[in-house]
Image (cartoon, rainbow over all chains, first blue to last red; front, side, top):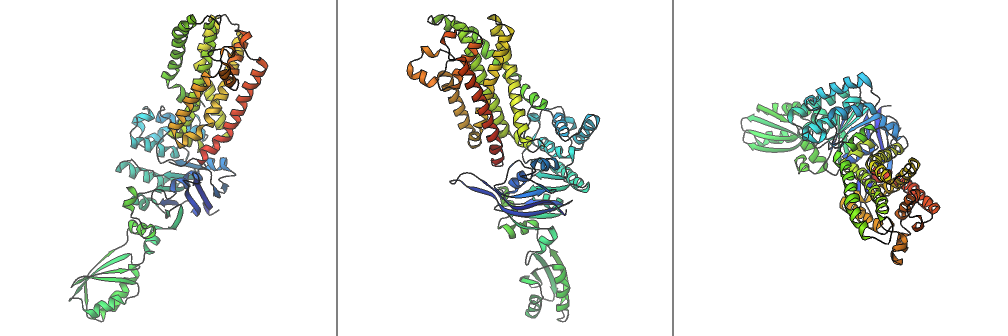
Length: 321
Length: 245
């Protein structure tokens, strides 16, 4: 079994004929075993709905999915034994203390006695919750509540771990700590799915990124491949001496992989190219015969924001609004 | 289940409130109002049993409402993601609700029965009647939870209106024979009428004023079972179809 998760035309709609919402629209997606797949998409793109369907909290309107070979509709109990989900908003047993919440969670997944206490104690320490272990859930700060929500999955370490915006409300140190622990979970064999709006989180965690829009998967690839897939995405700033001649400009424009050239000054131009690593040697070769000296080269690759904009028509910054 | 129970009973003020509500109503309002009523002999005892039915309704409504609040607060969503069968989950909620009902209604029930000199078998039978009614009422409240997912305000308004109508158009506070015929014809369709009369039958209070106990047993059992079944059928659909936050 290569795929830990596979969806087949997965669809979820809500509401009446008047206010009909198709949150997920015939999604076909594969998550490979042992990878971290990050779902990136604007609000309303169907990320949370997908996670709730995979954890069997919701039932699909049409289509289905398998998790480690179990059907989410026909074998929902087995799916729940395999999957763990950390929800977007830390909510739940308001009057309980972190120790009891994690202990209950561990008990449900079959941990008992000394082993349970040991795991719970260690998890509380790992997530900086030890000093707050005797506070009630409702007395925790937003960040502490979120860390507790994420920590649940580290008590039973499921085969498929699902995180919905795992570092929302968490401070910078906390974010880095959670990211490292999620990567550690993957290293111990879990398949991880993370839904996020944060580009940094996606870049730090993802083996592959799936960009979603309007309840559909737009593209799923590794970060490098996604960046390379943008036509003219790499920007090469080239400094030359003497001043750029029309002959040199034409030679650079004609280099295969060049999408567009902008002259910045008489000694500087910006080339928008595909795969700068392939383009640069070709460009150097073509200008050599023109007696032009390259004085500086600076390459900037597209950011994940650029990738997101390219595929969804929205800037990542705008989806936080 | 112990985790759920701890969550339920950690809210001590609620339990105290229910006992306070009973004590205040019984000893202050009940005493005063029964002085005004001369047509029904020993109305104070009649009122005491009616108050127990009102409490059962309130506590069972509270349990049903708590279930809905759990869904809103995200508690149920979390439980739905755990490896527990949906049927077990519903039954667990029901058992937690019943235990909450026993804790909150039990002491007032025993007190009323004790000061009226009732025997232990009567106490046991009346407890069973009240618990059967609790199941039906919780079933109704939980079945209505789909409204809460659209609007919690509408749900609260409907539950409050239902409470007002069902309690007033029933024999909880006055027997059927004292009602104007238009009220009585409505009250005959009210399951609380049968529950209240059955409880009084069990306790041998003013039997001449009450509906046939055989019919009352059938109605109370039928309402309990049908509402429970309806709740079990509707709840998973409601929860699993609800929009993600």
